[in-house]
Image (cartoon, rainbow, N blue to C red; front, side, top):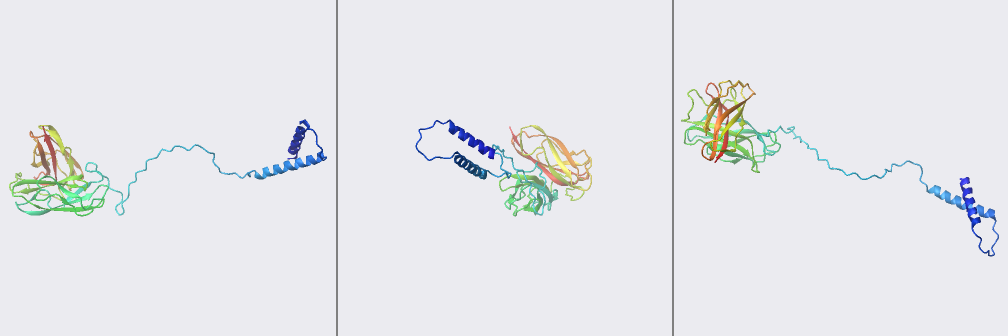
Length: 331
């Protein structure tokens, strides 16, 4: 510090010595030592102030300014909710889903397919279905008529809310018409927004005069044999007149015994489409699935046509859930 002060004083005196002298005016005599002392004191005072103003060496975390990066928004992750008391939502079968709505047919609580009635008989048809979708059903969800014979009923409200993963019994009062033969009725759930969802639920009743094989005893079994109709490949589509197509039926063995090679896919009613009752030609154990293909031809006249099919055992027993499909024929 002292060396720095002396250098500054020397420079100041040197500059003063090189400056041309002005015309002197009478002044008091000033001692060089006094000037030196005053300059040194002034410089030391300035250095002291500077040193006091200097920040301490305490490290700080002040970040070095950087350019603000451009952030691309990341899509929010999809979170699968867990429903209290139910667990994760069930896996959705996309083949029968419509938006968040879907259902599973559980069983025919009353009037299984193949039940016998006399003309004019009244009965109540009840289905048990499960909400297999990802949203609750409101009470104004409907059970809607799709095709076949209404059997005196019509589209109606289910009447209460149904939570995800729970079941509901849906009932309709019905009446057998004054006719004979096989009559099939098909129904499906309809959301408040007007979207059909879940499988088409069909059943067939038998009235006197039905063309039943001599060995057939139409009835539904809750044990052996039994079946769940999973669907068809051609339904609610348009076909040209006389257009050939292959219809694929899929049934699950929900009974307790095997289906043998000689079990039949049996024509119940409606339009035959140029096909007929045929052996399934496969062995299907309990829990297994049968896929049955039938070659068909659309009728020669435009219109809306439905056809009903059901499985039959070797003993001539109709069993399980019937399948109904509809096509629209155009020129």
